[in-house]
Image (cartoon, rainbow, N blue to C red; front, side, top):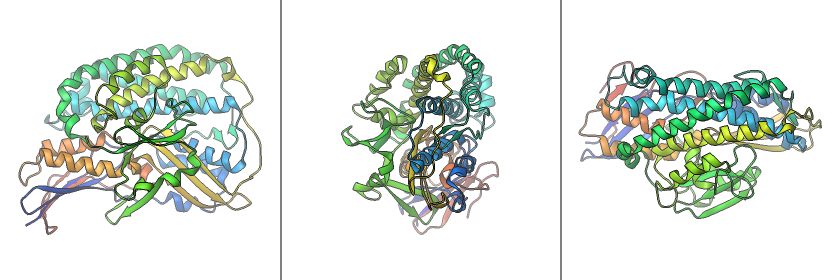
Length: 480
């Protein structure tokens, strides 16, 4: 008789989810599913509003990465205006995007994932947290707080607010950078760079002990997509799309993000509100691809900053061709933090960053616009259609977590097949399944545009769908 295991809720991710593991008649793992049962409907209630309001409205989708939604939205607005944004405004947006990346990656690495590999997957739950991290490695924990604070300082210094800024507008930005804000950021950069470099060194020393996770946490072949500039260098704000195969062959390059629908199709499944984007030419689900820091480093030819390019060489040595193991999202995140800090310094060192020419004024000139940028978790698309008066009639948001949906489900299946022993959910299995999902740093509020909460539950189910065992984080086990 078939069986099903349920893990509910999944913890230490941005949002809530449920996992079900399905067994065949022989008790082997047949399939595993990440269920996202939240629904918010941002795409519908943005309809009927002016496109000029959407940067403020859509940034409320998420409290972790509001800057990413603000920037994708204003870039869609730029396209509707058909306006050339002043160069300084582009660079200020670029700095804010990099500040967002630093604070979000720091949250994911230090606060959400480090307890797994510092404290251990089999440690008691009360120890496997940021509190346990403070007990084991207090300096590492403090570094995480300082680094995240620097990313937030960047956002606040440029936009005036740490969270939900209403500073970027279609055509540019609302205010230039103040000279004293620039000096304060330049003064704080050396400490942030030192933290990034010693954290990278600490994590690289730990990698030889993490071989089992690297081999079982999402180590399978997929396509990878990220933004690059015209010569293939990593670009987070204004690049073109590059998609590489599992062997590293470039399948698509320098694709204008406005044409993203030529590359990406979207499928749905009845058991999740999270969409399943796929590489359209290969169909669903064969067109599985990944986005985010791992994929960006796989797609780009170089980072384009000296210290990060040195670390990229170490990353590339992890595999022949693209690095597929999702566990290495953590290393890629640290390389990107170093790159972001170097690039912020380069942009701030340019005196033109203080120019007051930061806004181009225009009326709506087009009826359709796409904005895209690299959010911390991957490529983010905002696609709007409007009436002549600028009222929005259609919104489509393609979110990084959704684009990793197929890969996250396959990762859970791989982990369950390796670590499930018998028909009982153990703490060790539960923790490793959660850690496998956590490697992608999924943001479920972003990806479903949802309100409300769903606790995480993991279910073990047999071939006939009957519930064999279940585990609920914080609520004790259930079964049936």
